[in-house]
Amino acid sequence: MTEKLFYEDSYITEFDANIIDKIEINNKWELVLDKTYFYPEGGGQPSDTGLIDGIKVYKIYEENDTVYHLADKCPEG
Image (cartoon, rainbow, N blue to C red; front, side):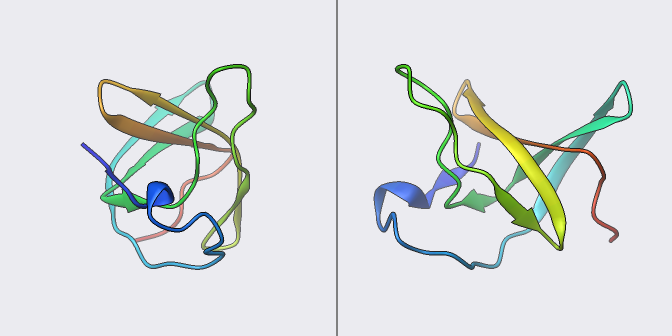
């Protein structure tokens, strides 16, 4: 489960979070953070995009209270 901070402040542009799960699928990565300000797609609205440790996050989606951050690479660590 991801703590959804985007409901608290939609103007945050930087935050600290921990990667609690990572899944590689076809050389792409689904990253699960313990908390996030990235807003997932839904209701016809596109998701936020941005960077995690300099790696582009190109799509965010939510499933069963978990927010997945899709990226081309996995951050080290």
